[in-house]
Length: 455
Image 1 (cartoon, helix red, strand yellow):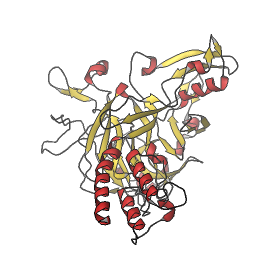
Image 2 (image 1 turned 30 degrees about the vertical axis):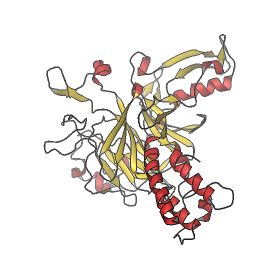
Image 3 (image 1 turned 90 degrees about the vertical axis):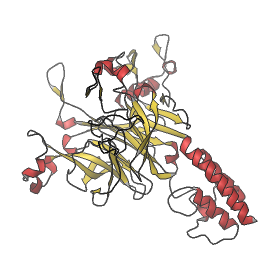
Image 4 (image 1 turned 180 degrees about the vertical axis):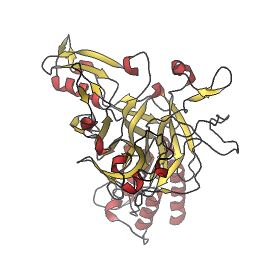
């Protein structure tokens, strides 16, 4: 009877959890860009005033930390979190809180056009700058200060530090991610040829597919020390694909997406297929983090095209096979008024969808993606993460110590309470209500976590 009761409870729980985990997620991230020609530079900016004590102009800008919710039916518009309210630091033509005004103004610097990563509540953004001459004609931005690296509190938005780094640091990446298995941060970094060995530099075939005046060697898997902002190459710059994302799941497996080709046309189901009826578009690649090499496999393309712009992706710890991707709706190509497949017009982006963005779910076992919903106001993040990612894997709730909190942990906890012998059982992790005892209340707490994604 007890066995039948347990099986019934688990069957009901499995059904409920499958729905809840897949449908109720909070996605957080750092703003990268959106598109709105109604504002200068394509994004919203409001001038508040000149702060004489700080000796700087204060703007409320579109950059900042954002969140959006997905409940299985509706994806909410990205909203700033924390909010930025002018009345908190400015009233009746006067600045009333300089610290808050500076906090607001600093968001103008939260820009990760060369990559960003969130680790242990700290967001690191890397901004690459082109040469710029000041009013006196002198170069302000050059190789010596090519990369601006800033650290932020990923909850409050406080800027913790800022520093400039030379171009030879090669900090530009298609994405960075923390590997929960070894605690290291990996990324796909763009390596310049000055860092390549002579055996490669002197090999004309290595650069045969690049433009004659190109000095770029491609992408390489590297680790990065976020304190020193120094990369360590695992491979030379081997890959020329147009990588747009990089993410690592809770099993320590690394994946990247490419932008995809532009020749295929969209089918009735919204996906792209080649002439053989096979899925086309962005391609999912897996990397071996030990060798840095792409793992050859039979995964298909995602079925969706995207643009050659940096985008964001992350994994759910509840399901290491599920990757969330915040990407563009199309490749920037489409049909014109004459039925020709051609680049979409920038001038008509509001109607042709050239810069529209969407949230996708990618199944890494097959490589195929599913478009969850379009994103209001065309936001793209430079870095994204889920609320559930804040809970360390392998701790609270990970009863069987396999690195994930899942239904199997409920099964093992019930077995243990019924007197069963559970392999790898952790009494510390099983004390889910954290009261020092193991009983049915811990099962209830674990079920609540799986249904709501928070303790």
